[in-house]
Amino acid sequence: MKNHLQNQWNLVAVAIEEHLRHLAGPGFDVEDLEAPRNNVITFHGVGGVGKSTPLRKLEAALAAVEQRPVQWGAPTWADERIVPIRIDLARSASTGSDFERLVLTIRLALAAAVGRPLPSFDLALRRYWETQHPGEPLEEYVRRTGLAGRFGQMLPQQMQAAVAEAVGALQLPGMVGSAAGQITTALVQALRERRDRARELAGCARTAALLEAEPDLEALSYYPHLLAWEISQLPAKRTVVPVVLLDTFEDTGDRHRDAERLLQRLVWLMPNAFSRPFRRSAPATRCRATSSPTPPATTLAVCPAESSAA
Image 1 (tube, helix red, strand yellow):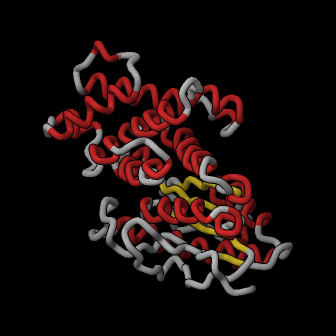
Image 2 (cartoon, rainbow, N blue to C red):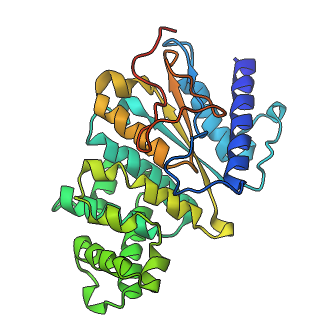
């Protein structure tokens, strides 16, 4: 088991090193939806062989150096802030509504890591939540579900700060406390008019279009593009590299095909996040960190549901 874990660590370490070099390269553009992706590596094995336990150990090793066995050696990214985010897809992505939990889990992890609003994404998410969950504040939902433990209240606070930033940037003091829909409408208008302060706040080229879209589950699946853009704009001292660890990936296809499609889109739209799916069977499409397929811009066949037996 120890050698198995070390081999997995070595593979992940090399893949992350390649990913970081790609991000630092002159040709990387987080807004490019056509470029091939190299942010996925997949591990597979039959049920009971031991995948979830090593995944938790790798999560710990990525999170803190003291959790990493000495014999594993020090990675080359010592100066980079790696943020591991482990998600059990058997629980988190089995239905369309649970895709919300998947997105919230990633954003909550970043809330603790970056400690600041991510305005364009936070405004879009706030509008989505107010539309889809009328009468249930996100703060109450996070508290009721215990979604992120002691960091749970950080996201609602940061989202409220994003609203305040938008009101300030647009010089609309009378809109303090207004619904997110009213504020995003004003922001979209300002972006369409190319106002400098609005573009400084939410300068992603697709922000206006995404904020204008009906805030439903389909729109939510595109918001990770805004999240990726916000991560790319963080100042140097707050820069983070998310490493999303996806356990039991095959459950997305076995239990809810739409969830698989939404998850593939999320991975594709966040090229600056590194994803590592774990599954029981070998994928029909080879998914490695160094060789990824080039599907249409909004889909990524990370690990298709139709797969060969392990």
